Structures are given as structure tokens and as C-alpha cells.
Image (cartoon, rainbow, N blue to C red; front, top):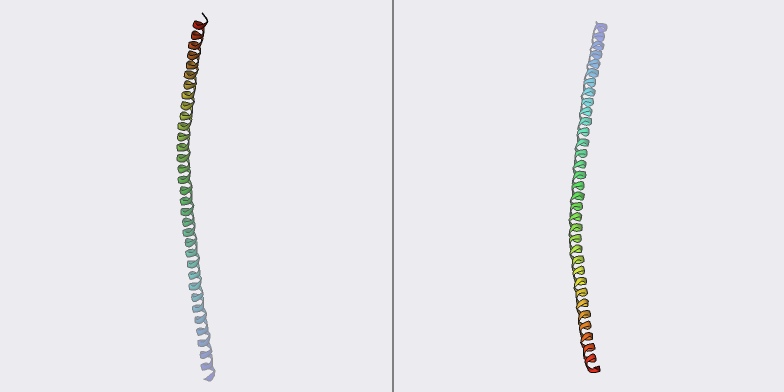
Length: 123
């Protein structure tokens, strides 16, 4: 009988060992599934960072654009003021030229008067 019982116990030990390996296999599969889920989570996280990076790049581009628009406005205003300044300089030059003409005419008139007076005295 002892042989039968020993055989039965040995069989049960093998069955138990087999079940243990089945359980360990399931445990390994579950662990692997957890790792797969972790990998997918990390991929999603990477996509999130990529999205945030793109948002930052877009905001920086918008900031550069807004600065360029501001620069254009400043340049246009500077040019407007420069045109006004040139117009004023031109007008000042025109007035000076007109004054010079009037001074010349006045000097010519005075000379003419002096010549008449000298002509009358000489006659």
C-alpha cells in the first residue's frame, strides 16, 4: 500500500507543481500585459509632450509675428514723421529762397533809387 500512497502523493506533487507553473505563467502574462499597458501609457504621454511642444512653438511663432507687426507699424510711423520733417525742411528752404528774392529786389530798388538820386545830382 505504501507504494500506492507514495505514487499518489508524488502524482499530487506533480499536479501541484504543474498548477504552480500554470499560475506562474498566468502571473507572467498579467505582468507582461501590465508592461504593455505601461508602454502604451508612455506613448500617450510622449504624444502629450509633443502636443505641448507644438503649442509652445505656435505661441512663440505668434509672438514673433506680433513683434514683426509692431516693427512694421513703428517703421511706417517713423517714415510718416520723416516725410513730414522733409516737407517742413523743404518749406523752410522755399521761404528762405523767397526772403532772399525779396531782399535782392529791395537791394535792387535801393540801388536804383540811389542811382536816380546820383543822376539828378549830376545833372
